[in-house]
Length: 249
Image (cartoon, rainbow, N blue to C red):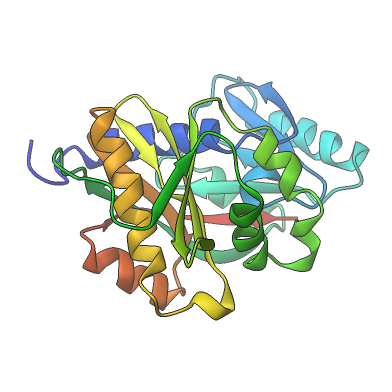
C-alpha cells in the first residue's frame, strides 16, 4: 500500500519484533501477555508486553502478574501501546491506581534497497570493547551493571554497528533483523565524539544491513520528549507510527 497505509498491521508487527529484539533475562507467558523481569534493566526488560490476550478474566490475570513481580521484589509495570490487548487494559490499570509514565513513540522508515555502508562504519556480530564503551556511556548508572548481560542475551541475528573516529568507536548502534523488519537499538555517542555525524553514519550502516537482508522497514522506539533524537530520525525519513507508555503500580 501507501507509505504508512498498513499502519495497524505494521505497528503490531513492530511491537512484536521489539519484544523479540530485546529479551528480558527472565520472562513468562500469561494469557497471551509476556511478563518480563531483569533486575536493573530497561523498560522493555521490566514490564508486561500486552500485545495479545487469550484469558477469560482480565482482573485475575493482572492479580497473577502483580504476584509475580512481588515475588521478585520488583515494581509492577505494563507497557501499553496503541495495539495492546485487551483494548481497555489502560483504563483498568488506571482504575487500580497504576501511574502513567512518560510517553514514547514508535517510528518506522521504508528501507532504501540500494543503501550502502557509509565510510568509517564497522559491523560485527559481537560487540567490541569500543562499541560497549560508547553504548554504556549513554546509560544511567542503574542500567550499566546488567547491560552486558542483556547484550549477551540478544537474538543471534543481532549486528553491532559503530562509527569510528581515528580507529576508535565514537558512536554505537545495533540492529536485529526480524523478517521484513529490522530494529534501530542501543544508539549512543561518546561525549567527545558528539556532532561528528556518528549517529547518522550508524543509522546508514543499519539501513545497509537491512537492505542486504531484503528488509522492508526499519523501526525504532524513543522518548516522546527526546526532541533531538526525533528530529534526527525525522530528517532521515522516519515517521511516527505508534505511541506507548508504561503503567506502574
